[in-house]
Image (cartoon, rainbow, N blue to C red):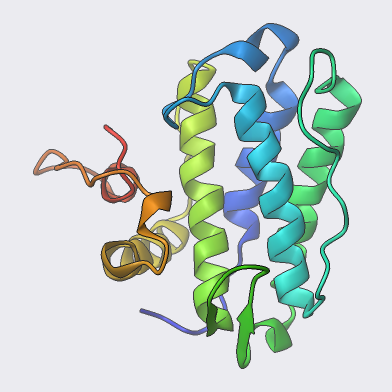
Length: 191
């Protein structure tokens, strides 16, 4: 697993674009995340964006999100705010200091900061795929370096993750599967 800083922006940008492209009708669409509609996935991404930005900055308390979804609560302005938050998460990991030492998430394990960054990268990559699938859009095209870093991480981290319940059972991808399909398969999704 690489511990050199990886730019999260190439994964954050397409996810943010999918968030802002989500229309009101799409909020109730099912996602590949078991039991989650798109609105539930947006709730999760709101927590992820704030939490991983806080980890990068060394903050104990992430900036509050926009709260749990209720009918009408994921209006266009809120989706745009989430897209901005996703970009801010990627920006926070551009600071080389974010990659030094260890950190612990609230109620989570203490891990090396590069591991947290790669978990954040995985959240961006996998949930962009989830959201694209839910909205019946093509999977984002991500740079090879982004996919390689994410795949290298999930192949090592997911099988021994400190909270294995966060991932589904791995799926065997096609022999000729690309990196993105292999990433989602390791995390329990059917490419």
